[in-house]
Length: 309
Ligand code: ACO
Image 1: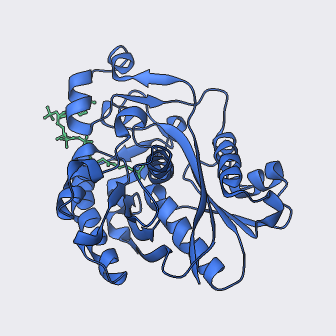
Image 2: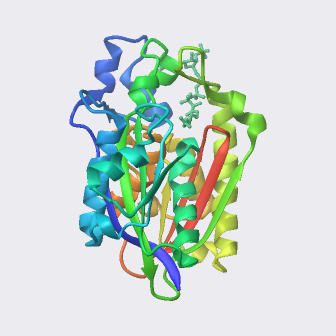
């Protein structure tokens, strides 16, 4: 018996902030942001906290999976922007959902958080401990963004995604995963004394290109598959150039790369799930497709998974 995604959802706040809006408040311009990152606009939450974004995505995933909150055994929320240290977002949405049978905890692995949550949920479902695990990736990065720092302010957006993990038939679902961390690189991407994101962009870029490519290839090996088997690549949406590098590493054509960075920017732990939801909804990923998810983030951390849809 395998664990797999049986329902998906996403939520992004309504307010759109374009590159042209940022030009008015920062020494930057649309051309620089678009060519260096692929971003054209991002969503910014106003009057909503991370738990609100998480809850809305979770409702959609539960509806999509056609299960009730009382059937959940565990809620895992990947976030680096919780409303407060505790209660966790997982506990907050457990209350809102009235998921009275679910244990709840947050996972902190920055942009790799969704893959960390996916791999954790897989263990609990395949061991038989829980029938259904709700995983969520939710971020309000706008609250830890220094809006005076052009090196970082242009990159991030707010959003949430959720997935219900349950049993699927043999040979389907999450076929393999890979998780990793390198604490020695933590200094390149962290929060500073003011709790704002601080980043050495060039170092993170080099790490991301290398690690995303290596993880995508090695997770396929773990699943007993090769590059030729891959139907779709859904990478963490941090920078279009990093995403393109991992597509090239898998020798995939342009149309097999999931891209939403132009609309949402980098939404950290929400980005892979938002992209996956969009590809499923638009029919680009179909039954039996082999899908590679791959991400990297602060920590430094990384993660990848192969799913047979
Ligand atoms: N607008 C205009 N100019 C800018 C801006 C801006 N917003 N930001 C930087 N510049 C300038 C720099 O000051 C520099 O000027 P200089 O040459 O006079 O010094 C020039 O543009 C080039 O800067 P670089 O840093 O070399 O630009 P690069 O091509 O490396 O792109 C970027 C920068 C986009 C940040 C890239 O390095 C990158 O994407 N890195 C990875 C970032 C990432 O993925 N982070 C993940 C965070 S996820 C998480 O865990 C929260």
